[in-house]
Length: 90
Image (cartoon, rainbow, N blue to C red; front, side):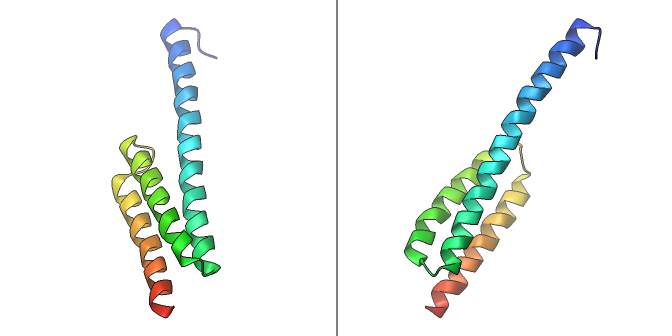
């Protein structure tokens, strides 16, 4: 436990940021999982709508530096590719 006042404040702010990062990361994972589940169930119209939500949450996480911008871009490309593959089969 820190003794210095600034270190105590830094510890509090780090915990707040950690919680925010966990929430955003969880939101991203949930959004991606919803798209993948919809694609697996062959609900392609629903998947298209959910894809937009996933894009938004990934962009938000990248903007706030929770994940790297390239990581967000890669994840967006992969779920879009998965949806496109399912659309071409249908």
